Image (tube, rainbow, N blue to C red; front, side, top):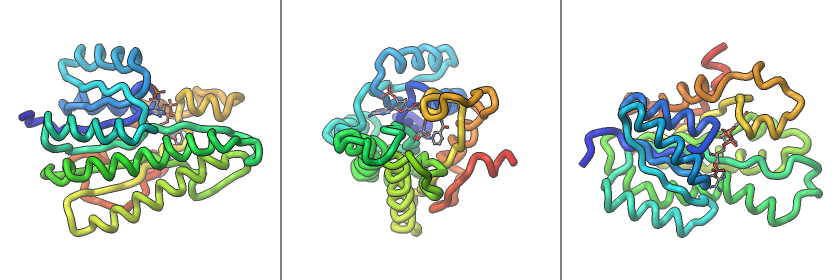
Amino acid sequence: MTQKRIVLVTGASRGIGRAAALHLARQGDLVIAVARSKAALEKLDDEIRALGSEAILVPMDLKDAKAIETLAKVLDEKFGRLDGLIGNAGVLGVIGPLQSCGPRSFDETITANLTANFNLIRTLSPLLNRSDAPRTVFVTSAVARHPRAFWGPYQASKAALEAMVLGWADENENLKIRANIFNPGGTRTSMRAEAMPGEDPMTLPSAEDVAAELVKLVAADETRTGILVNYRDLVA
Ligand code: NAP
């Protein structure tokens, strides 16, 4: 059984999640890297191996609740515990007038950004409870608390994610699991470029800088719970 901290990162194929996976690997943690794109995960794996560290690649669609159950079962059999969970994967969905979003697209955004994290919490809690210092963090967006025109499904999914995670943190207040929320703010990734095509990406913090703060929330010495951490406040 590995002595390393075992940390699962969703959305590890690119952007903030990929940068977080590399940070964790660099500090010697065992990364469970989840995303749909197998090729991108394999490229990440090459980089992690080059650092002298290791990763477990899990190419899967987080919208598939059964696949999450299988993942939890496999991790249970292989490791028997989980020390950290970074619920970072997300999709933008339709950016436009709310009525222009079809019901299928709306459901997909909610499933990827909210329901997947519910299923991760549901199935991985027993493994987290077997860790000495289980730490979890879920990635939100400023629009969860400051909704604006055209961001309908995305901001609804993030607002619900925050409510769900903060409620869960409260349930665990006297238990070992710590659960927090992290708002990266505008970050130089493909999601941001899709949302704000006219913006100069070089005016934004890099995914690496943002991820360096994100991973601190799954470190064993992070004892806070039920809080929102804004990246911009940390670097102001
Ligand atoms: P990104 O570059 O688009 O990366 C999103 C990641 O999520 C990818 O690795 C993607 O992998 C994965 N993903 C999406 N749907 C998935 C699914 N159904 N199953 C498995 N993996 C899935 O986005 P990012 O900018 O790094 O965003 C990371 C988080 O930060 C998101 O939660 C986002 O909402 C939040 N955020 C970002 C910004 C920003 O300015 N960038 C601002 C506020 C909040 P595959 O496509 O390979 O599956």
